[in-house]
Length: 213
Image (cartoon, rainbow, N blue to C red; front, side, top):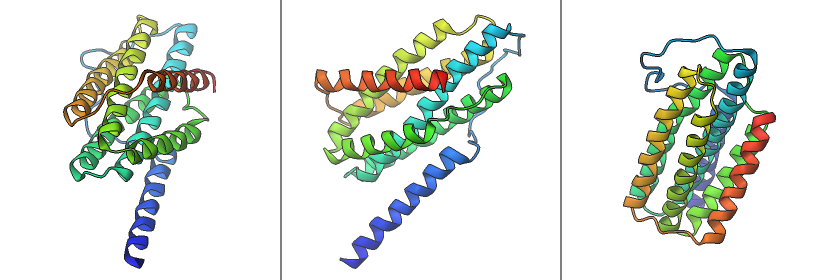
């Protein structure tokens, strides 16, 4: 009994350490910044302001993704599912680093609400995982579907001259699609309509808050 308690506490300490690294330390990408052949173009003041706000939202979304995946990995029953969650979280770290880098280039800052987004997403992820791996994977699949839609919207709203931010969002969208397909292939179930509606509402609250704060 004592061994099991120790292991749980040890895992929780590890999760606290991960949260601190996500929220307080610079993120480092394993892949290169996806700028392709695009160089930096001069943005008008209003364009720069809009790009900053949109990329701040995307950064906050990646902070939430870290919390979500780590929470689900903590409560996942199947080792294969847990490993897949952590692998996806590692790939999302690239997105976090890219958005952070782009915000710095634009002269912007990250959302002051990021600790709230991480904590809430971690709790939601852990709860989803507690309902079983199939429900947890279905949650991931639906989340990634909504994120893809959100990224498509941002690609339309970004200033035309902001090619570097656009390259980042395009690569993020491709990765999110892959994560969603992976979750479905591992056995994710379709979620009931009221839950998907609630997820969408939560996403809109996060988007609106991070856009301004």
